[in-house]
Length: 592
Ligand code: FES
Ligand code: MG
Image 1 (cartoon, rainbow, N blue to C red):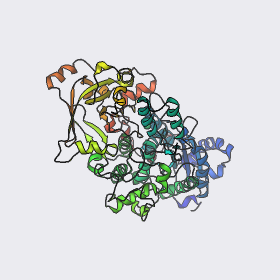
Image 2: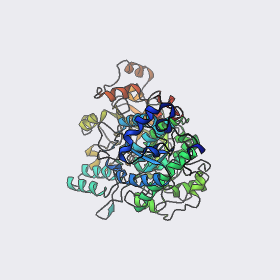
Image 3: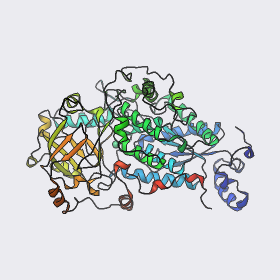
């Protein structure tokens, strides 16, 4: 590259640091930056200024490793002729933020939009890891449409307990059932959970964190192979360095998110999500990212483009292994290579590498067929999300990669089978009600019950909570009945292995069908036609609707109030209503 500022496009940061019309403002902008080693000459030289959106902090331990990785990113930016400027993003720690980190995804998005728009940045490295850090940062980069590249922090090393692999989250859901059934002690429960987190990094299962980083890679927004490298591996630091270098080149080449995030890129991501057995949270997050990218993505796209894709990655919760082994087997590129060879992927999509997706993937053959299966001999056929609708909701999904063979054999999409499931509803208003009453014998919960939770959506919770994977009452667990069908207007953890019907939209708090459902109503689910209805007649439904909506907790903070007033439904990505009308902000400079 050349340092001659006259030979190339004027960068937006030069309006701050090299503005002959506003010499006084230029002086003001420059003075503080000089104190930590960036000279005025350098800032005025027209070198690209690259932000490092730092998501790691003590409050976000899954991403904390980025505090060290940023040094390597800085080296890469410097070596490619750019100037690094690191700044914090709003923390999004999945396990700890109450009432749910989902409430803060849009807040982190808003914060990052203001930073990318209002400061002298020409490009940005988005450091990602924990669940919502990936979608929030990509949503913001799209709104501003500033050259951007994703750097995943990588998953933790594989966890082991007593010779068994124990994966983040998944081991909690499994141990919880064993604990309730009296098979393990409380101490064993805690020890197993601790052993599942052996190092720095995000969750090592194919939960929402690994999924969303895989989605970023499938969309073409990170370097090839970035998502799966474990946080503690040497290659992770090298990936950080290369990502920093590439961020500078993206600015010089003027490659923006809008050049990469096309509808085809999103459809690729949906297909990859099926093949990796990815998180159900990918649905609202991809919807949100598409919305801010100005891309039409329909809720039915999950069924039309994702349902028939087989499960290729043998990773928990849908499979057996964890992130380290997945990476060694070839990671996301090896899965995508299988899909590409089978004609299931758009190979022409441009990516941040400067090459097409097909060029990136060429020859990325899996090295371990136990972990990444060939397309023709998958772990499961038809492993995408089933999309359901009916009088209880207009949209809900069910993750087929975690549905048992027995369940499939009984109900699924085989013409000669009936494909219909009927059960009695046991309805809970939020998780407090569930915990209080699940063991209440008066509810009469048996093996023909469908557990329903409402008040768990974006407006109701608020934020939409991961509570739909409810376990049966202790009495059933002790009889060996480890799961019942569940339905809810909330979400479930990406690490859960339950075949729940979730993300039901519209939610109860927005007047969706779950709001008028009563204990004992019969629900019919027809998996072949994708219908889910309560067998309640129209007149009775109309009467119940006059009784008003089930109560939800009041706003506890100013942001909860603003969030509830602005949020859309999960089918639509739970974005801020109207925010997607703001596009390509970087094309216009903010006023002085
Ligand atoms: Fe942060 Fe799983 S809790 S990645
Ligand atoms: Mg989660």
